[in-house]
Image 1 (cartoon, rainbow, N blue to C red):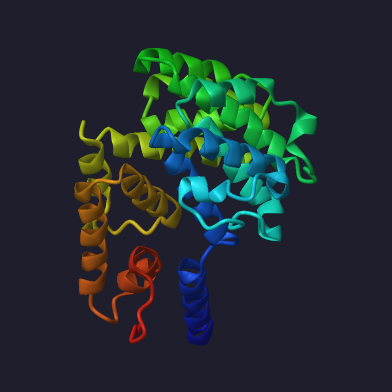
Image 2 (tube, helix red, strand yellow; image 1 turned 180 degrees about the vertical axis):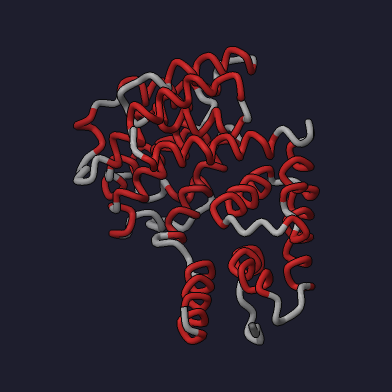
Length: 287
C-alpha cells in the first residue's frame, strides 16, 4: 500500500473510533431509565413502564409526567428516534438486565406481535436474549449459571449466540464442547472457526489471574507487540464494563504506553486507534 493510502486508512480508523454510535444519546437516556429502575421505589415501577413502552414503541400514549418520575424532562423519550429498532431493542435488553420479578414476568408473557414493527427481526431476537438474561440473573450460583448457559447454546434462537458469548467472556473452558458445537452448527465455515479461536483467546486472557481486572490488564501492554484490534477492543471494553478505578487505571496506563512510543514507530501507528478509542481525539492531536 502506498504512503498516501496508509495515511488515509489510519485517518479512517481514527474517525471511526472517535465518532459516536448512531442514536448514542437515545441509548444513554434508556440507560438512565434503567439505572433509575435499579435504585428501587418510588421510581422503579415508572422506570420499568418506560422501558416497556419504549421497547414496544408506545411512549406517545404515556402519562405526560412519566419521564419526570425518573428525573428526566417530560417528553424527553418521545422523539421519532425512539421508534428506531436499535433503540427499542436496547430497551428490551435493559429490561432483561433488571433483577425484578415484574421484568421477568413481562418478558415471559411477551409475544412476537407485542414488540411492534420489527422489519429486521432484531426486536424479537433481543426479546429472546432479554428473557434468558432475566432468567440467568435469578440463578444463585456460578456452576448452575454455567449449566444454564450451556443448555441455551443448544437453542435454535438468537439466545444461543448470546449464551456462547457469555461463556467465552466468563472464561468457562469446560464449556468449550458446547461452544464449538453451537458455533459450528450456526456457521460451519471458516468464520465459525475464527469465532471459536477468538473465544479461546479470550479464555486464555481471563485465565491469567484470578482477579479479572489484573488478568485483562496484563494483556494490554505495548511490549507484547499485539495489534489484534478485535481482541484489544474486547479487552478494553471488558475492563471498562467492570466500572472500578483499578480497571480504568489499567486502560489509561495502556493509553500512556501507546503515547510513549516514538512518533515514527510502526507499533504506535498500529495502536493509535486504540489510543483514540480510550481518550478521544484532542484538538491538537498529531500523528
